[in-house]
Length: 230
Image 1 (tube, rainbow, N blue to C red):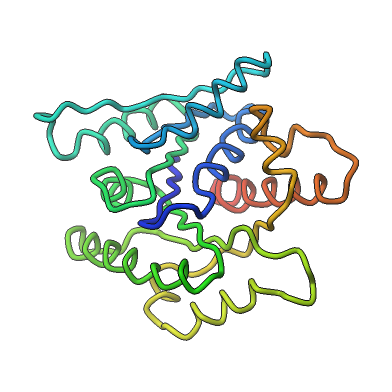
Image 2 (tube, rainbow, N blue to C red):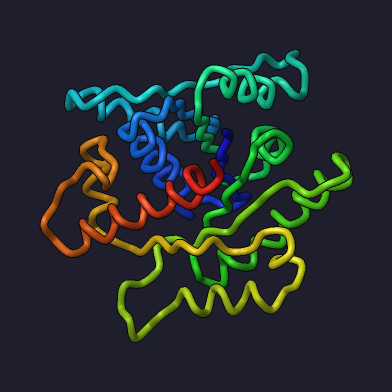
C-alpha cells in the first residue's frame, strides 16, 4: 500500500505525520519504508538521523534520486517498485508544486492532504483540487485523496477544527474530491518532544494526558489509513 502526504503549501505537519505513521506501522511489525520526497528539506531523513543517534529501532527511510534526464515518471515508478517489496510505503513530499507531488497523485493508493485551519492554509486547498482534477482527466478517474486537519487547538472552547470542516463543507468539489478524514491531529507538545528524540509519539510512553492523546491520534490514523483498508 502507498500512502502519500502532500500539500502544495508547507508548514502543515506533512513530515511530522508521515514520520509518526511510518514509525508506528514499523513497530506494529508492518514491513514499512518511508520515502523522503522533499528535495529541499529532507526532514524525514533528519528525523531518522536522530533516531539512529539515540539507538532506537531502525526505520527504513529512503530517497528516490532522479537524474535530470530521467523519465518524467521515475519518482512514481520508484515508489511503485518499493511497494512490491514492502507492505507499506509512506511518502512525504515537499510543500510546493513538484513532480514528486504530481507523481504521488498518480500512483498512491491514498493521498493525505494535511491542513491547518487558518484561512491561509484552507485557501490553498483549491490548488490541490486543481492537481487532483488534472490527474482525473489523465486517468479517467480521480485519485483517492483525503484531507487531514492538523495542529488543531486543544482548547475545547475554540474548536477551530469545526471552522475548518465548515469551510471545506461550503465547497462541494472539496467534499467530493478530498473529503476530511475522521481523525484530527491536535497541537500537542508531545509531537515536538518526540521528534527531538527521533521518536514517534507512540513511543513516548508519557504519563501526561497530551502524550496519551497524541499516541491515540496516530494509532487511529494508522487504523483508518492502513488497517482499515486491508
